[in-house]
Length: 360
Image (cartoon, rainbow, N blue to C red):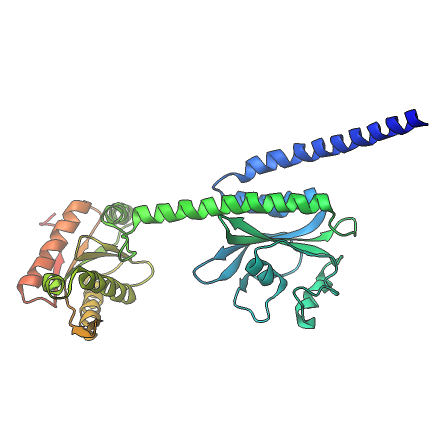
């Protein structure tokens, strides 16, 4: 009898080892695939492959925008509509929002009887879309911060999620969170390489790259390209009288006002220390001059308040229009001449330059 029991235990142990090995054979390749900088690939794994590991039919992946505290739906495999965005400012919070706030895995065995968080009847109306009442809400964590949420529901066997399945979700929420966090960091680094740290506009190098691409496009498809160059008037007296922090604030405020005067398709850059440039695709010289006048007026209309001091702001603006036969350097130089003419004419005004065939 003892011998039989020993053999039985060995068979049981062997079966457990085989089961663990089988799960590792599935988990390891997925973990490697998730370790990438492709959010679409990660989202596909989250809604199509991870659910199979834990016996869930349905899954949805949300990515958190920390600036707005809003979760955005990245991918899902639901046959019915679900929320595209979820605000974290809900009161009372939904289960997903509560999980994000706690940063803890939320395991709901029965959505109808679950009490922590306590869900109102209106928050349970969605449960009619599901075949089973159990689900897992997994906040995705990177360096102690939530970067998204993975929701898993509708167990294929009709049962609750067991300990092994919960452990797998716990593992993958860390792995997926780390990968999404890496993507966010990479994108931030890319943005910083292309933008000016003070204003958030494109930097000098990226301006030239964008200008060159727009000139090539104009040359290929025809049309005209207009450029605005703006220079802050009297920045040195502001720095001398109130300090460089006040000068930086003047540059930031002028950058915001320029941004408010242009279209989404226009491209604004901080060209130099106190100089800005705007690329206006498919824009006539007359229309570009109107935009330039709007910029001059908006900058001049509202003084800057700095430590209870009212400081008048002003910009001089040069405007030029070019076809695709001009090079980026030539475009910048000639528009800069128009800007210089505006400065010489008394500042706070617009000067227009048009590239003619003879000038080319």
